[in-house]
Length: 420
Length: 212
Image (cartoon, rainbow over all chains, first blue to last red):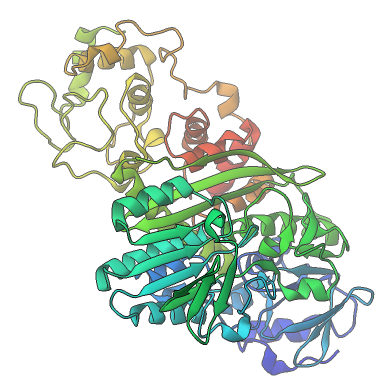
């Protein structure tokens, strides 16, 4: 067991915890290793550390020192948020909760030895492993596009630099130019996300480049909050937005990053900005751990344990669990269920019935917010929807404004809940 | 419906802040002409609390049920209301005040002459004593609270979503039941409260009252 001290956060508390942790001895306190520091991983790290009160050794492995939330990145693209305000660090998880924060990549999982291998060398043993890696893209799902083309045609579907690149490209569009989006097939991260994205791009362009056009090539017949978005697009953005569904070739796409063209149902379209959001799958580490079935990692609903390995829990977008949408809110909700199950299994503490919930807010234009939400319960088969609601078309502007303000409160709440 | 004459007498404890009748103006509180059927927080030119603005956005409408709940304990319906009034505990007295105020609202078709049997001579949020006296299980409340904390910040910071920290337990319990019974608006809270049992609500109230 070798660990480089420099890979730990340099706070006194973190280093002290790391050095006193019983990892080297392979005995003592139970060890939880968490891969991925987003809405699932950061939350489960904080809750296991906090609720076990030091009885469980918690290590969080996340390559980024500053984590930019993918949620609210659309509001940054629309000019409603600053990118800096969407960046969060792990110092508080280390100093206030005693989480060992390791900035590194996990390059392998040995399920027999119960260790994870780090890119910098060395390995970490675990009693329970939590994988919360988010999404990766399915190779070849958009012919002509792969990750090497993400500078020419950004996906902007992970937070941070990709969102910044996309916004810069939109701001640099020629007058009357075309922004195109290749929308993803189901299932994917944040079901309303591409359509909130389009709304925010339209908001930006209607101020800076009002003769510009927005073209969506969409392989899906219908999409999340469709009536609400289409009403908003008509009311706020006139004829700026055109969506090509599968009946007109939206499911037959080729991207040509070098020529800045897309081919939709055989028709070549010259575009100025092209936002390619490919088909998605669980973050690659799930494949490496051989816990996927198809593109996703199936889990036991009541505990979020992998169906392939009871010592591994999978959270958030990467998991296949049933009815919950892939969202930051869902990952945060699932993390609390997993944290309780892990604490119950590794220490002698009370556990309670699992409860899950989700709400997704979307912004269509200034002060025009909408939301959709549901509650869920664990059945043997899947996480099953119990009850739900969705904003209505034609709502009062005062209600829409309150809904937007509520989303700002949610962002402050969930990030405090993740990072402490 | 109650007795408007007795209601007028009872209304004397309100007149320091509220006017009603011909020429009524806003004072410390908004005027109460046409209050029945009005959306909460909608009197032109009156500056409301954030909480009342939120209730306005959520579409809370003043009617017999909501006004009765508000008169019983204002903070149970609107957590951060500026109306510092201890509330009228007696359902008969509330009926009298409602009868008095309804004289100053038009659209009588929306205001029943007699209180329908299902409606609040006993208001819906007036919970039985045994629900209010459940001893909340703190550890359970702590687990359940994790769901609340996705939006409500544990340290009481409130921007866009109100604080639920350090509420008196009884207010918390009544507020949650008011969401569960869909008297308080807001679909997220109606959804969350809707699937909580009496014991779970008591556990949450106990936890948030004592949160460290």
